[in-house]
Amino acid sequence: MSLPGRKAPAGVSGVRRCLVTIVVSVLALVLTLVVISLSVGSSLPRTSLQDYLPVIVSSLGKLSSPEDAGGNRNSTAVGEELVQGGREPLVEQNGQGVDVNSGQPSPVTEKIERKEPDPVDPGDTTSTPDEDSSKDSPNAEQGTCDLYHGRWVLDTSGPLYTNNSCPIITQMQNCQGNGRPDKEYENWRWKPEQCILPRFDARKFLELMRGKTLAFVGDSVARNQMESLVCLLWQVDVPQNRGNKRMHKWLFKSTSTTIARVWSSWLVHRSTEAVGIAPKGIDKVFLDVPDETFMDFLPRFDVIVLSSGHWFAKRSAYVLNGNVVGGQLWWPRQAGKMQMNNVDAFGVSVETCLTSVVTNPNFTGLAIVRTWSPDHYEGGAWNTGGSCTGKVKPLDEVVRNGFTDAMYSKQVEGFRKAVKNAGQHSSRLKLMDITEPFAFRADGHPGPYRSPDPNKKTQRGPDGKPPPQDCLHWCMPGPVDTWNEMLLEIIRREFERDRS
Image (tube, rainbow, N blue to C red; front, side, top):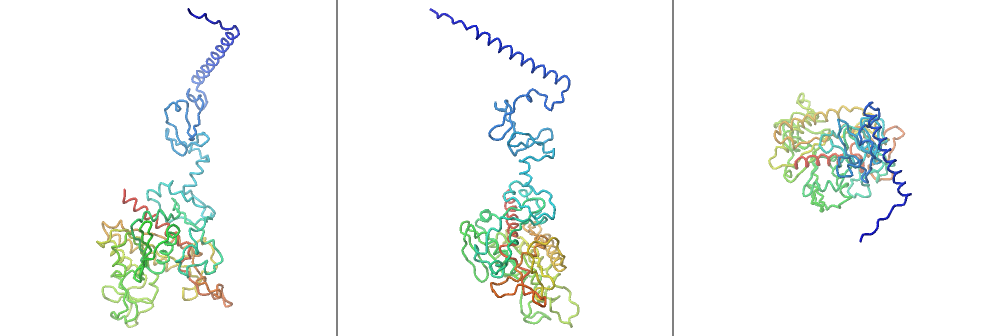
């Protein structure tokens, strides 16, 4: 027995007929509009049926249509590029498509552009580089970026250490501890033109150098850089002093990384014994013999940073092929015209040292040459009243220094000759070209703030003469820390290249 059917109320039947009529009318209207737009070539920007459908913005910031929601995911997430017909739209968080060719920046494109090194007014010194930009710069990752052409920009985040957080700063470079009143010189960072130089990452450096030894070889400016690096690393791992008279060493136990320094004034052999016309007592610089002081340690080093040059301004005699060929602040009149001055001698010494390092069969590491560190003595030399007093920010333009230019040129020439001599090992030689960027940093030297003596003179006297000062070495913290940002980037590129 079946249950009797229930008859729908008359009112409900009327409502159904009304709804059907409305739906049919709407569909007819939509189809009519589509046919009209297709037949007359409508000027509407979208003419496919899909374009008339609603746009759905997913929680991940994707643009999708109802078809995409059904599993056909060819949409673009924020920050990704979707190439269609040669155009590369970027998608904003709010779901509005932006054509990068339109020239109209969106919040997303502005954020990306700040990560890229856009063209800037050379006089603009207010912008701050983005610390994480290296991840977004393909040039930085591919190792094609020129680190040495750019500009100095003010970075209000300040240095990564202070004179109070690093106990090994040589007193003459402890500018704040010695009473220097200004601090802005600590807050300028180098920004290359075509890519990003990342802020120094101590943990990344230690991980790259895990189980390895990096050595600085050179004079007191090399010590300046070594102390800067140790101070930067000290902030994440307090090292152990494992050094002796022949080699200073700091061991960072977290990664078994060693930072070392070996003193070598000329990078080539030196003796005070009499040679030919050069009497006993005067320094003899053997231009064609590498300095055994560091060559004996060379097999222990994975990375070696070499720098020299400033001692070629001191009194010395130059020996080549066993003969005295020239000198600085010394030359006997009866010897006639000398064959080689100090600038040429420097170039020969660079070629000798680098060729000996890179062709040594027991050295398989990376050799980095840090170029000439410019001084900023005005009105005289270091021992004749030269001064850098009153410099508190980078120079707007560099006043050329003939001696600096000549020494830099000879150093680069010696480097190129060593590369040629190295043959198949030439890839192990790298040039860290700091000379031009640091020619602007007259503000970064200790000047008269060389000691904590509260009675020291820091201003010119009544006669106009400046007080004794240091315009060669660099304050710590200060511009010298940028050298180690460059050093880290060179090491990162080389190690990643070797792994690939």
